Image 1 (cartoon, rainbow, N blue to C red):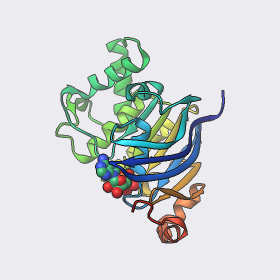
Image 2 (image 1 turned 180 degrees about the vertical axis):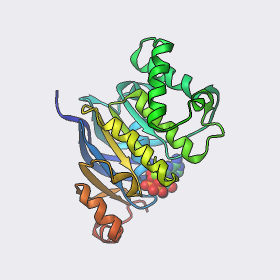
Image 3 (image 1 turned 60 degrees about the vertical axis):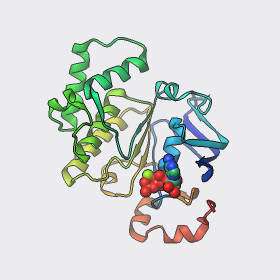
Length: 255
Ligand SMILES: Nc1ncnc2c1ncn2[C@@H]1O[C@H](COP(=O)(O)OP(=O)(O)OP(=O)(O)O)[C@@H](O)[C@H]1O
Ligand SMILES: [Mg+2]
């Protein structure tokens, strides 16, 4: 088994005929945590959406392999089944299906097996505990009436329950109060314990990173990766901003 879980090669993506991502290349190994940083509008969420197969995002060229298979050839539902999970920047509300049922159905679809309600409830209770979520949330309709922070916690709850091989967390920490940042960070650490799984964290905040191990940082400016480094690159950006990188190579390809 190769250590590379996700391999992105020269990936170019457009949205409504507007080129957004230009020849992105990087690999994510099993057990690794990668940070994707970049100014607003750089294309970070676009990368996540393209990997998940969102039909608004058109892959113009390039290759992506996941677990050794051609990811781009897979239909959307097959991507989730293959073990990719993305937590959305703005999670949607789904009236009529409870958080618990949503997770149980997703798990059964992914594994192809029925899960006994008792076992499921036990696991769910543990995950709710890690996230300091009141058990009553599990029986509320998915995200309906959840506060911004509660929606983000519900995303991490799904992460802990579904145990995907690759999780893309898109600003899961935005809008969280100081205590919630710590709680969510604990949830992510719990996920990091599985050394076969990998993470791509998109964030603008250093708070979430203080207790997380980071293996690599990629800086995206105007749809192009302008710098790669380890965790210290994120600290450098936190101190000095993106200015230096924008001068280095972030010319706007979009025009
Ligand atoms: N569905 C869409 N329709 C139209 N334009 C889009 C769509 N999705 C992304 N874009 C455009 O693509 C560019 C990159 O957007 P994206 O959401 O990927 O940025 P981002 O790096 O995630 O920014 P932020 O830090 O603000 O979340 C932006 O100019 C955005 O307007
Ligand atoms: Mg975004």
